[in-house]
Image 1 (cartoon, helix red, strand yellow):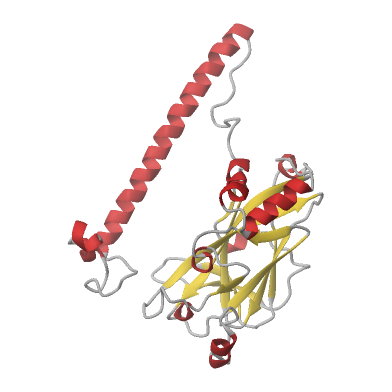
Image 2 (tube, helix red, strand yellow):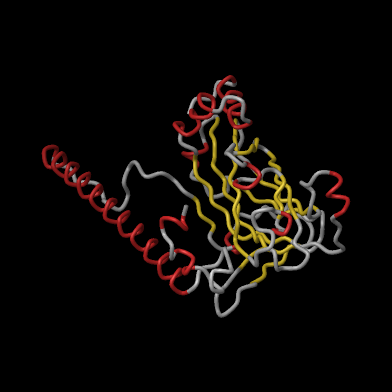
Length: 290
C-alpha cells in the first residue's frame, strides 16, 4: 500500500532502504517534525483549556470575592508516574536479589542507562505504589496501567528473557490483538532474533510491554522481574533446539498511571473472553467500584 500511495517512502530508510527499521537523516527529520507538531498542538490545546478554565474560575471568584485557582494545577489532571531513567526506578532492595548493575550502554555521547543482569534467576523488584500520593491508593481498590521498558536486540549477544510476577497485587495482561508481539506478558523475550517480525534485521531498541496491576486492600504492589533463559516462551521442541551458555537482560524505564474506568469497561463488553475482561469482572464481583 505504501508503495502505491507513496512511491518514495522507502527513501526515508537507512542503508538505501535495505534497513526496514532505522530511518536515514531524512527519516529522522520527518519524525522530528511530526513529534514537534504533536507536542506543539498539545501545548496549544492545554493552554487554551487552562485559559478558559482559569477565566471561568476567575469570574466566579470575583462574584464570591475569592482568589482564582492557579492555572499550573488543573483539578482534572490525571496522575502519571514516569521513571525515565534507570537510576530513578522505585527499587525494592529487600525483595531484589542477584547482581543487577547500573550500566550505560549508549554510544556517541547518548546515554542508555539500565539495570543489567547477567545471571539467570536474578530478580529485580519494583515498588509500583512507592511514589503514588496516598489519595490515589487509600481507596479499597484500583487498577494501574504499567508499562515496562527493556532492551530488545538482534545484534547484542546472549540476550535472554524475563518473567513478570506481582506480590501484594494481581497483575494481568492488557489483552490486545497479536498479544505476544504488542504487549507480551508474563514471559518477555529480549532476543529479537526469536521474534519473527524482527528476525533478519539489525536492531537494538528500547521495547515496551504494558499490563494491568489490580490492587485491593493493600499498601504494597511489588513487580518482580525474574531473569529466565532465552526461548522460554517458545514451543518445547524449538526451546530444546535453542540453547545458549550465557544470558543477559537490561531493564530501562517504567511508566505507571491509574487506568480510567471507561477503558476498563471496554473489555467485559467488547472482549468478554480475554484475561483482561476476566480480571475486571473479578474486581467488580469483589465489590470494587472505581
